[in-house]
Amino acid sequence: MNALLLTEYMKLELVEFPEPGIGPDDVLVRVRACGICGSDVHGFDGSSGRRNPPLIMGHEAAGEVAKVGGNVTDLKPGDRVTFDSTVYCGKCAFCTRGDVNLCDNREVVGVAPKEFKRHGAFAEYVSVPRRIIYKLPDNFPYEQAALIEAVSIGVHAVSITPVRLGDVAVVVGAGMIGLVTLQAAKAAGCSRIIAVDMEDAKIDAAMAMGATDGINPKETDVPAAVRELTDGRGADVAFECVGYAKPVASAIQSVRKGGTVTLIGNLQPNVEIPLQYVVTRQIRLQGSCASNGEYPQCIDLMARGVIKVAPLISAVAPLAAGPSWFDRLYRHEPNIMKVVLCP
Ligand SMILES: [Zn+2]
Ligand SMILES: [Zn+2]
Image 1: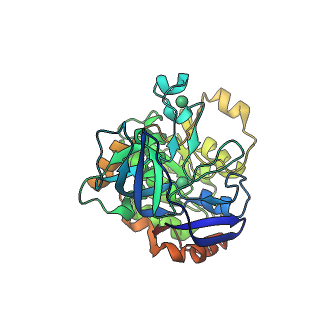
Image 2 (image 1 turned 120 degrees about the vertical axis):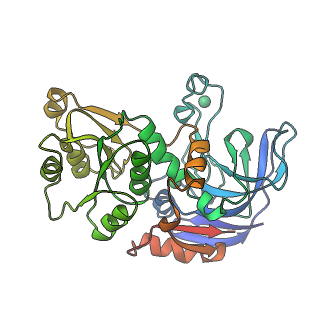
């Protein structure tokens, strides 16, 4: 099969690669679309250490079933599917209590840190366990399905945040995850959504996707502006989608007493937090990791247009164009949101 192989850091090559084998509980998927994730770019340059070459990356994918293992009875060749990026074991204490995103034996498709290696979906075929596969409606475009993983991160973050009808939400960072999180927050009942980003173009995108207000921290003090918009009170919830010290601090300082800050971004391993501010105002800090089986809800929300991803797709390109798109993303070419490759 054709595959886009990371042969060494900073080097992607279109190669002939053996078709993956499948075990009795696995499904071979003929990949039709696979999104390039920011984490793939950080893997491509070696900075994250989570994509040890040689590796086929790619975990945001959709396609059709090509072959099923002996134990798989509810899927057949030709079925349109997508899959979770997290491969959970289904057996550990966390899986059995329903927190599959916290699985002790968690692996990720298209990722290779020291502990495991799983080839991903920048290839014609990928093998994944049945338990992480979800069926797609007939008319659901594959290139939009490739964004379900990103949508699921926003939907999960909102689902573990106490949101009430009419709440005010601040979304810090209006990149891919911020833009899907704000749509999920709106669907969950937040009526005022304040988007924060350093780039005006991203604030414009956020406004187009349902944000009611936009703040650029380069020009405006974020917590002060949020207070001004909320009669001095602060927002009920904040979603932090960047993961650097400054945006984390501004999310914390933007919520009201008793408010919740849900932390999704995690670019920096450690950030300082205003401890006394958090304690004395009884602010709840909530981490959010990947998603926990929210795929059926995401598929439904997207199919009904409640969460829109079409405007987030900057380019749909053949697999062979992968190396040049990785290069453009690596160089932070402006105005590129999601690039989807079609093997
Ligand atoms: Zn991703
Ligand atoms: Zn597990």
